[in-house]
Length: 626
Image (tube, rainbow, N blue to C red):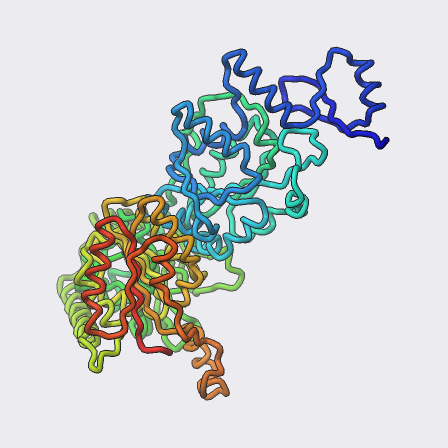
């Protein structure tokens, strides 16, 4: 008769260490320890511990409980989650909290991890507060993919928790491996998957200090330059007993915003006062909405024009006469002093439109050296590591006591900027007229959309090669109403729209995307989650049936190349999928495909009406194919 394997262990108040023994070994153990109870499985031990808690009237407090409590203390409202077998302790803690009427962050299930991190990204942009993402071991971590890159490049604070495969095999501890997948998910260094994209990664080694780990992670995530953090924990650790404690959350806040040195304030202000043709370039200074008014005040006092270079936030009111559009172009070459505030790539060094040899450039950013980008340089007079809002407040205070700009020079600068501002708007207006022949243009799409949104509407922009029309025809004048990913991985928009709507439930949210980006967004997951969690938004797809960015880049490098003739560039996505129907099937979205210019206004109005009634809508707009 083959020997049977059972599990033996000591009954203690700490996590149980169970060892496998055969019948002979069991007999020897029991002879030495006749009063010790034997547990054949770790499940038996957990059941016994629960019975002990009921008998004593004390509820077990585990590391999983501590993790959720710490997130609640840190101000996390939502856990965007794709749960797996590694989250058994978390699921139990959530259920227990619900039964006991204790508050925890609300779980938003996302059937794809890319949607989860995009939603946390969008929520943080709108609210200013980091949210949590829970994913399943190494495979769930990998499924976050480009979303993690976007959060890193976009400086978005996100708390990511991933389980680890159990580190015991034979039932030695509660949570031990119990299915084949737990072997296949055991990798040498799970943290290495994300280490290039996170500010901090660590693994819980004991349930006793889980709260400290959570608050340290949040402190790092929310300190500039902000970014994602990654914490892992195996099932055995999450099942450990922990001691409930009151945590001094206020003592774990992010670092204070950095300011300009006094000499730097004087240097920048003096150079701009003396300049003949100054320029300000920014992309994301409006991530702090308080920065917008400071930038307006500063530029008005010195009559300095502003260019929003590929903006990912609303940084400066688009209707202001000092707003000179979204591409610096010749303005850079003509400027004698340039102040770059929060902009990763203010110009392309490989182009002809760069600062001239005599111009002075001052660079102000929370990360002025872009330390995570190995090859990067924008030669400048001085680089300052400073928070944009703090720096502009300093500059405005300096101007309070400095000799004002000569009135003649001020008028000259302002008149020149106003003339350019008006010239740009006239050109944009001409392009946005109703097209002839019914073929829909990107300019016509945005001109029609302008009629169904207001200044409070949040625009989630992932339109890529259609972005120029978005910026020009959907001018933003209110801080916190325009967002881009800040990175380069497509598929962000749908999840970000969900997070944005949860953060601002009283505002309309519109996601602007291309057909290529829509493919990447895992739309079935997006619209399922949108319906389940009451986060409706309008999606407008600029459907040119291909990857236009890839084609444009190819043509720049090989304008007369072999792939310039016929369909030999592998960018066509025709025949087009029925994107609207995908959203309708997955999440009951209002679905409309528009192929003629005359039908567009009605479709957009109907779509927005559906959103206001609580239902997501997708308008698939077929523009001229590439």
